[in-house]
Image 1 (cartoon, rainbow, N blue to C red):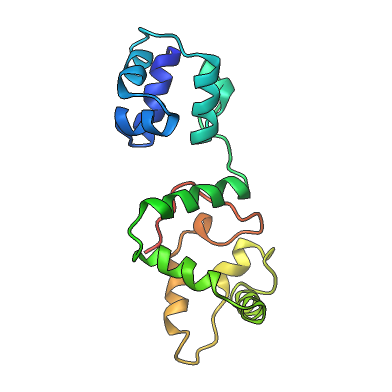
Image 2: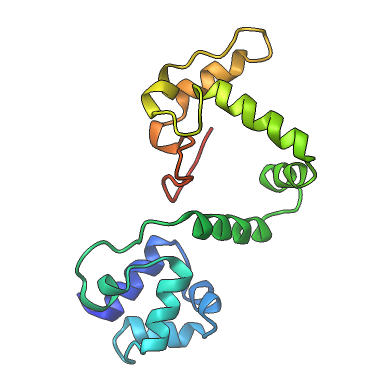
Length: 171
């Protein structure tokens, strides 16, 4: 597989049009099309931009060896999420939730942390098995949480590292 074919594979994996992919890199769709068709070489600058913007393994992009995606770190995940929020409707659930969180006072954050520890079996570093078997207190208000804990795939639950799958769809 050529570098151009790998660029196309990245774009298709991300479900982006030539125009949207190029827009994120600061170039037009024609430039991306020519790279994908191997009519134009992939420059070092473009390769680095693709890897930085889309969290792609540069070694894979250049050689085809290894995994296409790099495991995201916490800062990368937060940045990606915030960029996604900016693209969404201001009244989406995610935007409303982040707005509420942004307005919390320190004691409210402390309350949330304590509650998360209760729900997830002690500390944020609790094992996934402990989370999977944790039964919320049945005070009526938590009845739906029991269902959520059992239906959210283990890989998509809160982890100590703060990272999980790239594509999270809960619900």
